[in-house]
Amino acid sequence: MTRIAIIYHSGFGHTDVLAGDVARGVEAAGATAVPLRIEAGQTDFADFFAAANEADALIFGSPTYVGNVSAPMKAFMDASTQVFMTRDWQDKLAAAFTVSASPSGDKLNTLTSLAIFAAQHGMVWIGTGQLPGNNDDTSAATDNENRLGAFIGAMAQAANDSAEVTPRAGDRATAHSLGQRVALAAARWRQGGAKDSVAA
Ligand SMILES: Cc1cc2nc3c(=O)[nH]c(=O)nc-3n(C[C@H](O)[C@H](O)[C@H](O)COP(=O)(O)O)c2cc1C
Image (cartoon, rainbow, N blue to C red; front, side):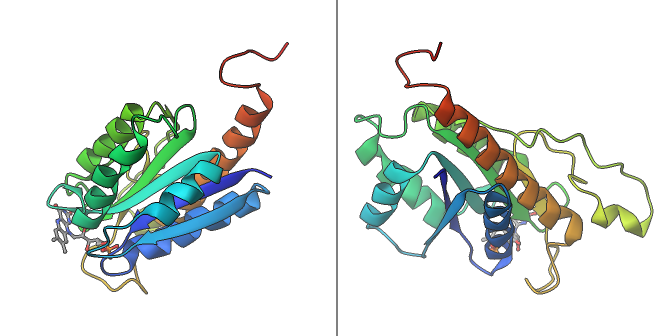
């Protein structure tokens, strides 16, 4: 069975909502979603590393704080140097999602940080694969998938509303789509042979 670990932090619940959508996308593809929520102040990630070892792909989720990943997510990233030399994540698939208050909010930088993080671990990056939503100036634009037009990962905007109100439908569908895409890609990746040989 294809297993996808969703490793994320959420300070105020918005990234939590997206993580749930990513997980439902994974399950919709017939794979197993393993959500792993990083808590503020957490320093021991042994369980996370064990779960990551069992997974075919890791999907990272972080709110954008001050134009980058949140401190708890960075704590996890820094702690992962424990599995950097052993190359535990080499050739696993990776993807990411983020949410910030502003339409931009500099959240591209968050996804770029996570893509570099994955690259340092030798992972293979999966983007949204989605064309930008058909943006227009009508209110319906908030319901368009990939309305924020990102290719590198799933972006969402939460303004200052509670996590019960935002992210809105379009952004949540984008997160769902990313989970589904990564799970389908991971299933194909598993069938392709070991990392040091090519299937005939
Ligand atoms: C410390 C902090 C820094 C933030 N920095 C940004 C930022 O740089 N750009 C932005 O658009 N929103 C910023 N925000 C807003 C959050 O990205 C937004 O509220 C997001 O939905 C929080 O996700 P969460 O509920 O999962 O923690 C910041 C919020 C906090 C608490």
